[in-house]
Image 1 (cartoon, rainbow, N blue to C red):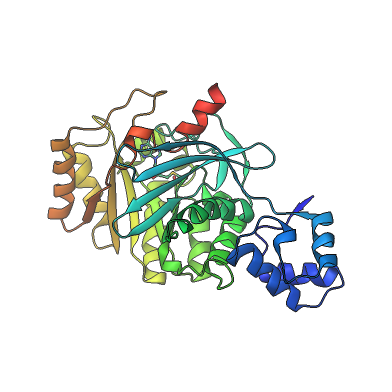
Image 2: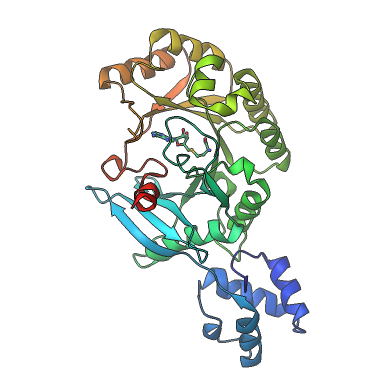
Length: 345
Ligand code: SAH
């Protein structure tokens, strides 16, 4: 049966008109699904019994079911393995930050980008997620937080998958998040992270949505970047950086560059210098992420002194740099690690 969860108001309105019902029923349906977060048509009390039955005959409200959960020792980070009705599982992470509740949403089941440091890609990509499935991850956590009188405040589309390779669904999800009848989130509280799918960075800029773009860089020159991220062979560094610069200029939004720090691989002085020179004069900042070691790969994070040295070098050369707070390291919060554990079992 067709999933109704994730349809926007226009689609719901079309659906009720198709059932021979008046247009305003679409708005009511949207409110039950997204404002009240009900999971059963029979709970939609202001809809006529006949309509509820018709809906239940033709549609399902497909939400996400929790399969596993891991909480960090400090209780601030929780990682959920959520399943959809076809049995596909994705990871979603809740991070209780000082500035609010941030969640990390997956955009695909698995990933086919092949980044060497990433656990999400080890089993390849199964399929794209629909807008409803990304929304279901969001509502799973929002409903949990609602019990504590809290909500999801910021969203990073930075879980498993390459969001710009699932462009239409991701955009539909982002637009739905913003709607008043849904979570009413401001676009500024949403970040999309990409490995650098250049044509779609331009496409995204043309949407003129004030979301934050984050680009995974991880190396300051092509040879190393291609080794770490095979997508660099298709979209090389210079093109990615130009797209980032153009995105910043056309949207006025600061682009963040993610740079995983891997001991002895991309953390030396020459690389810090190259990185600073690449970004000089850009409306950009660098997010340094000490690598979460992945069991399948033999890479380690640099020493604290080395991490500070790298960050300081950038700052001294007028590049805004922050070291990502390490949340959830004790629960393997790096993308894909919890799902892999289940796939391997
Ligand atoms: N495909 C998108 C979004 C998913 S990856 C992208 O590449 O941006 C999201 C972020 O998690 C990326 O910056 C990625 O490099 C980072 N990441 C993946 N594996 C990691 C690991 N083992 N340790 C630290 N960060 C990791």
